[in-house]
Image 1: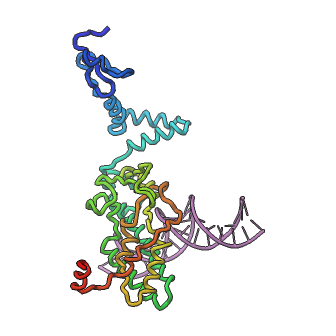
Image 2: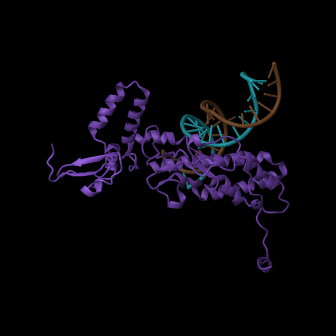
Image 3: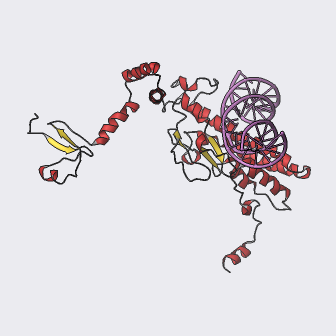
Length: 301
DNA sequence: CCCATCTCAACCGGTGCTTG
DNA sequence: CAAGCACCGGTTGAGATGGG
């Protein structure tokens, strides 16, 4: 029923035109698309892109329709799909200030004026609470060593203040090496402490909408070598047993407060079991200064 | 007044020990 | 074997304090 001149046949999969010769070598059960003059087909990917574009450039009518459907919906699965769609279209990732995205700030104190500022604050509080726990570790050492313990904690505290409590980890505006997210604010789960990556590919953008912001607070900064079970007791013991050696507090600092030993994980990837990892015994004390000559002699025996 | 800092209370849930 | 409990892995939020 179609006009033969100008009509073409192509593969559904990738849009390759099927010419007379090629037709005979097309695999069995291939799906074909018949096009008339002026029509084009770029393959099934264009189909999916059209479908997905709904999420990226939603039309007002679509959102309205989804809201209407959701308000009457009783089936949990469809409720979730519709709610997820509405959540996605409510995202305003690019917006940064209260003026640009007021709903994002709902429930936050008025002093928070932009998203990065709030995220920095939330990271800072987490790190600060680690420091508090380290400080209270002073109770682990005997009274004679307590002063030295607090001196070491004091040194860490100064370094931490200089580093603004590593608040840049959550700040999408920070320099590349200092943040854990993309410049748009996407965080990816780094997977359980004993696994290299996240099998579920969890990701989140707390900058996108209020819901994501709230949900992000359930993500954890998980100490690979555990803070309370391992690092703090090891630090306390190191100070107690120093015998003149100098505790390498910067090593402990890295374990306690930096991404060298912290993994950002989705709550499902947060294993609360004992990690059974120990601090590196070779790094607890600073290597004693070795005279240059001796060092050279050791390199070339 | 705002900001940084600290303290306390509350919540979720896992581990491992004791006890009945 | 289950229940209870202390402790640990984390988080947030309210409120007090002190300084520029």
